[in-house]
Length: 213
Image 1 (cartoon, one colour):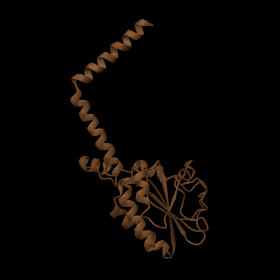
Image 2 (image 1 turned 90 degrees about the vertical axis):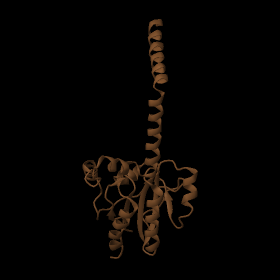
Image 3 (image 1 turned 30 degrees about the horizontal axis):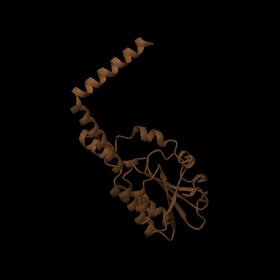
Image 4 (image 1 turned 180 degrees about the vertical axis):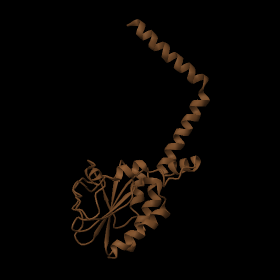
């Protein structure tokens, strides 16, 4: 027993010695880790990675394409049972009088700018569409303050991730358009944070055509 403790203390002593003699490397590593976390939270991490490596993000999607094979098909019936409000009360969705625009987001998707694009889209089509935003994760106090600026938007939770799994969300943000009869009219491509706000604006023009039918 004493021998094992001695060897353990010896390894710890060596590790501490290495850390003291290589503190510059550790400092650099922590700086990179923090920068990666910050850029990822803003939705820019992978964009910078693609720019540095020269990879075309539109071609870097074999795994996404494979994962998207489990997406529900447009035209099929989908269930939104499992979504709740922030007090945990079940939401009765989809809405009977209008289309339901269901947007899944998280704190790591560059939320602010992209959410503004969807909100502008909702405002233009408020007579035909109701917007439900499902936040996945634990929001901060700043998030709650930010959300108060979005009027007439329903903020929802998916506490057991049942709808998340049922709709094969996986990479966020992801947008779904569900008719009052529960039929899926639109599902956004599985691109996650690869699309910047201007690309989402272009994609939402396709959704406008569906709403106009």
